[in-house]
Every structure is written in structure tokens, then in C-alpha cells.
Length: 248
Image (tube, rainbow, N blue to C red; front, side, top):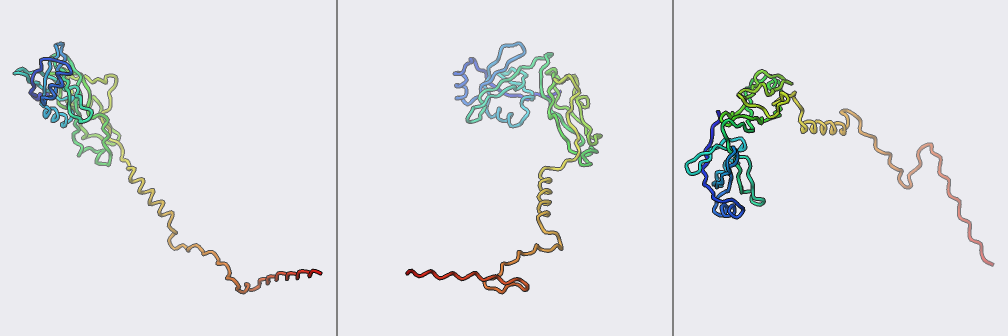
């Protein structure tokens, strides 16, 4: 059975944007509690309490008892509106819970025996498909968590909905198949390792082979005035220019 956390709030008598702005000027966060075929209840909350719950994570599936003037109402926090500039909470919506009326809620999955999982010990990787599972259940029997035992799983084995413990009388929203929760995948080589190997191979290919001869230097052109090589025919002298004819 899930536990409920108490949040203290004060009642608001009127609705409307102007009243909500006045509530914020007083240092409170306006909110509403709706559902269970009852009239909505207007409330005001301490912003520090709202921020605390948001920072904890998983606030959409946490169960609360909202206490207003000594009366408590069980509810789920369904939506939070934030200021577009400051990101401070500006309004909070709660859904009232009624016994016997099933509601949709997300329940976290906890994985057990990772240290003794044969597939993980052989180098496999736990690929989690669903960290939470959305189910329909009675508000009085909302489970705190589902448990998945990895103690007997090898590489390529998986955990499905029917393998979870702690489901009780909950019904998964995805009802048309026995869906996968997690898989023990084969070992994979990271992209960083592949890049390092490729760089090393390219560097090795660019370097000269060990013990190989250095490439021959290009033959230098003969210096000006140097003697012709042995056996080479001497160059013919250019014919002398004819003297210019004298004018008569």
C-alpha cells in the first residue's frame, strides 16, 4: 500500500485571474483540486513546498493528502504552470482521489540483483525500455513500485510486464501485449573507442614501414657551367650572328 504525504494549504474563496495574481502577490501559489464528481476546491500553497516536491522528481505519481482547515483530501499532483521568465510555479492542479474509482498513475520500476545477473557479469548492458509503467488502479491500492529481478537473466534475455512483482490488481494501460520492461543487451563498443582505433590505424598507415628505405631524393639539376656527364654528346655551339650590311 502506498503512503500519502501531507501538504498544508489554505482555502481561496474566489476564482479568476485577478484573484490568482493577488494570491501570488501574497507569496502563495494558487491551485485547484478537482475530480471525483465533486466541485473544484480552490487552494493556495507555500511555494517552497511546491518547489521541494518538484525537485524530488516523480511528482505526477506521488500521493498527497491536502490539509485545508483540518480536512484532508487525497489527491495526485497532475500539472504545474510556470512563469515564462522566472520559471517559478504559478499554478498547481491536483486530481482528487475517490475510493473505488480507478485512476491512471505511473509506477516506477526497481531492478534487483544487478550484481549477480549472469548477462551483466559477462559484459552485457542493461537496456531499460521503461523506467515507469502507467497503470490503472484503485487509489487505496496504488503500489509504491514494481520490482524486476535480474538474478537469472543472461545476454539477450528480457523482463516483461508479467515478470514484474508487486503489480497486485493493477492493469497496465498498454493492454494489447506483454510489453518489454528491460533487456540485457550484448556488449557494445563505444563510438569513442571506435574513433580512437580509426585514428591509430590512420597514423600507422601514414608512417613509413619499419626498416624500409627512405624515398630517394630527386636528382639535382647540374650547376651552371658544369662539365657534361661522361659519354654525353657536347652541345653544339649556336651560330654566330651575321654582321649587318653597310648602307651605301
